[in-house]
Amino acid sequence: MRRTGLLHAQLAAVIAAMGHGDTLVIADAGLPIPPGVTCIDLAVSPGVPGVLDLLAAVAGDLVVERFLLADELLARDAMLPIAVRAFFPDASEDHAPHEIFKQHSRTAAAIVRTGEFTPYANVLLVAGVPF
Image (cartoon, rainbow, N blue to C red; front, side, top):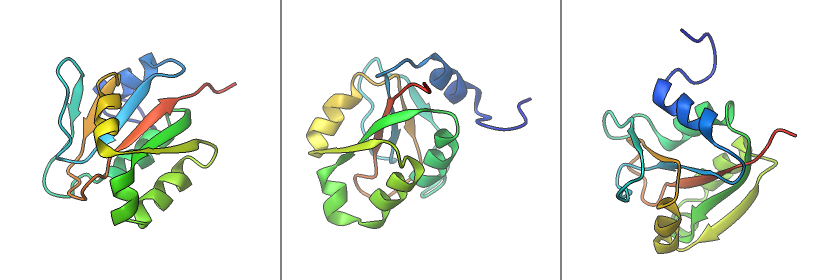
């Protein structure tokens, strides 16, 4: 039993296996999972857990050099992007239309599905290196 950090064994294993440039998607409840991409489904009920809950947990274990948000999220919700920036202050930020975001998710190491019901509340994290 781990004392700190991620307690979810599958999520911790995916992050431990990631290399520089690999991607992990933290997704709302509605993001489609492309065939062949590992889905770690943590959704329990609407809003539980939320995307920010997962980002808080992942931020302590994953070095993130860049993250991607959908343009549609930026147009609908000003607070979520601010919170994402706070979790990864040294990471660069990119934006793309939701359809392009979904294309990028096809090559993710995994997609972590949350119970988030905020439209377009998906974050693609690009792994960095700690040195």
